[in-house]
Length: 542
Ligand SMILES: NC(=O)c1ccc[n+]([C@@H]2O[C@H](COP(=O)([O-])OP(=O)(O)OC[C@H]3O[C@@H](n4cnc5c(N)ncnc54)[C@H](O)[C@@H]3O)[C@@H](O)[C@H]2O)c1
Ligand SMILES: N[C@@H](CCC=O)C(=O)O
Image (tube, rainbow, N blue to C red; front, side, top):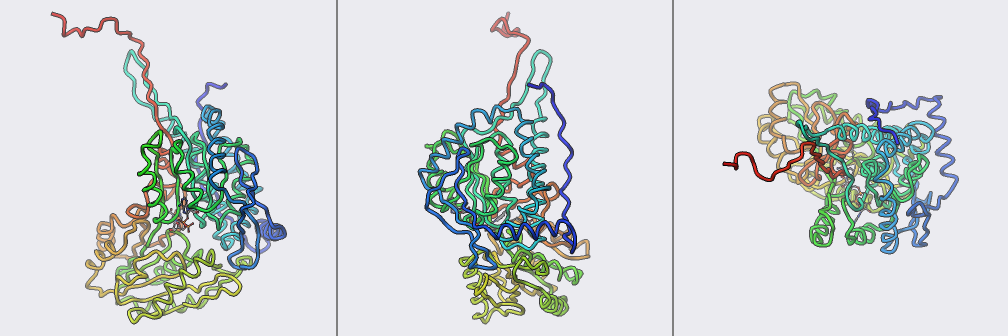
């Protein structure tokens, strides 16, 4: 075994490819889309490297063509969870002792594959499964996924290098152990990269993992799992156990070896998991680490000095890219009355040009929302606004599920700043705007800060520097990712580590050292060279 302390390469973000007509990447992606659609995949559980078929199955369908089935997947229940815990603990024996460079190398190899020969397949799977346009898929399953894998290795390398001081006569060192037990990774539907990171970040740090992907994203999560296998991930280090959230979650949280939860999803589910863990503290061998990035009700706040053209583009991108299904999506806005006539005109004009439909048509800016449940919930909010005298839908509002789950980009203007759609997370292409009197700027800032239980992302717009400083100060606790003159979405690994506080989660910043810290359990070792031979202290001797 080598005794060298190697250097890890400096991190650089994966380049976003353009997919211009005639480009190689565009042709490869089109071919991958065609190939994937030709087959109905059968997706097993993968436990200890073995494929398990439970015959309790669900279907993966394409949101923008909702009669088209692309896969059937097997679901885990209590028995398979037990099997997965055993497989993970068995794998742990070798995995946690593997020199860290060899663990890291597997994920560096996975990053290389994801940015190269697997790129088209991962993007195509994300487009078909989650209804992402090629641009949205590229920034997710190609770039963010690759960035997470590479950057986590870099972060871990820097963490491992942090060592305590030693004085003459002794030597202190910190050993960065993995957690004792297994980590439960639970991923949402909306980002293929997030699913990968939730499972991979603890695994890179030497932990073993049970990974439960969202039921409506099993298809792309399975591709990620196959990528990790191809890169050489040993059996049992990550165990792939799709299934009903409640069934899998209950069984996992009942195991004494639970050492951590790495969750991204809704606030409600994370709160329930936290309560369950809290009630079972006597059961677990350790205090489980709970890391959860959850919901948001993200805002755009404009000052009267804002550039209206930039504000228009940011509202549209921030609220409607990926159909408003980013946790960071702009969902409420505060607009000064003096800017409103111009902004309203621009918004209506620009929204009229948006193309939405099948994401395989590269001209479309938007696809469909994820499933029928989401479609109905979002439509419910739009109908509520339509029926209220307190609200006006100034653009969009139509919903059509005859072919796919399509919802028009919708702008609601409200008189009451506490209107339901100003406060609740909708997770769809709906933004609600409240128009305030310019002279009520400071009161409206306070209102913005107190309106929502969440604290995920927020954006302020203005050219008056004093106003920007005022907004930045007043809104201090409202967002873990805060933007000035930019949309509140699109955080990039290594540039804007991501996460929020309040009801938006534990703010452990996915894709950063802060997150990696949660998956290690330091042991500080002191070795003494200057032996003590007499128990008495010199100043005790008369
Ligand atoms: N803050 C962030 O970084 C971030 C990122 C992406 C998504 N999100 C949030 O995720 C939500 C949308 O994603 P979603 O619809 O997939 O969320 P969700 O909460 O419905 O599901 C998330 C995951 O939890 C699982 N789950 C559900 N009940 C469970 C239980 N009882 N035990 C264990 N697991 C259970 C689901 O099966 C899924 O895998 C939104 O609220 C969004 O804001 C947050
Ligand atoms: N990190 C992504 C959002 C992740 C949640 O869905 C962004 O910043 O837009």
